[in-house]
Image 1 (cartoon, rainbow, N blue to C red):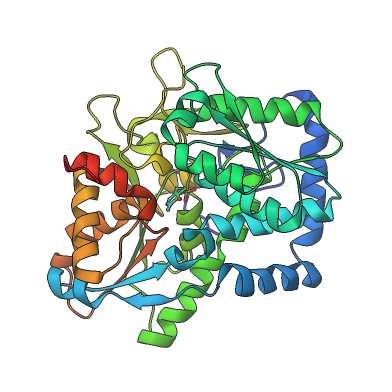
Image 2 (image 1 turned 45 degrees about the vertical axis):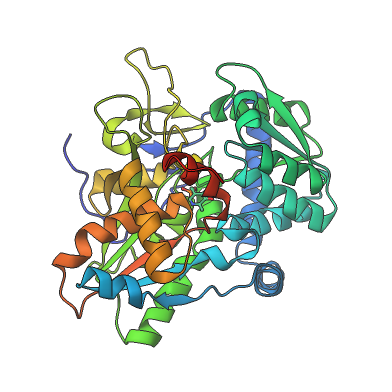
Length: 406
Ligand SMILES: *Cc1c(COP(=O)(O)O)cnc(C)c1O
């Protein structure tokens, strides 16, 4: 396919129809259109509203713990012997990842809209926990749709959600995984038009979700850009983040998109390799199609059926990717590279040993790519890796992989 002409700015999307080039949009049932348009209207109202921004900043500061630190990873830098590596410490946020940034923004939007009930869908349960957290904080009833298969294999997160007062509804349709839970959440939303807010957990879904999730997560890149200028007096040479649906990545990337000298790399879950079906690399091994209300790169078989992805890290097995990433891929501004399960596991162990930081397995994918490229870079170059979350949640998975008992 021909590459689209390079735009003057990579930061202007989406257009009025919610499109990033040929990606995005709102492919939803007619009955959902009024809801989507109502959401868009409120979003356009609040996004430049100083009271809204002040309330979000206050919560981000005192509840979530922002700004997160930009940390010079001296141990890893010494170990790799090339460019200086910095970590953007989203793992230090309340609830242990970047997900709280988006959930706080959206719960305030729900409040503005006068909604009375929050719904969400979750795969591994991380977004369900973050949503249940903000619902508890603001006193909303919360229903989380979760594939029955996932409910069975993610019991600690199911228990956390229940403690936080949420109701977890297992979805038995299909394979009982994330995409089935997404369908069920959309169904609930149509049925409960008046009072319900659907809190989407990544930079995907029908317009305006990809835009609003990106804007709530862009606090990551805005801070990181200012912090590196403060700490090093210049921009980084390379920035790296892992991509599930793509919210932590677009949050880091967006403020840097027009800094053309900064190389930007998104890391997909390569699982057990791209030859088979045990991976979650939508952009390296998928094809454009429609899922979750938008057009984007997806994992699908020859008949166009959406496939369940595989990754060692449950947070990366979203079967598609946010539409803005698809556009950034085709326009060539961002490179997307797969990292295998084993490579992520090695980076997990290395970071734990040389930094005293246990990273989430998702984030370990981004670190694994730094491990590959940093040794060949000059010592005065700078790489920022987004440490999207902490790895305490992953110790059982890692023990299994290592053949150890806890
Ligand atoms: C959920 C999650 C991800 C993947 O989601 P994105 O929307 O792609 O950011 C990555 N890292 C952690 C720690 C997560 O919890």
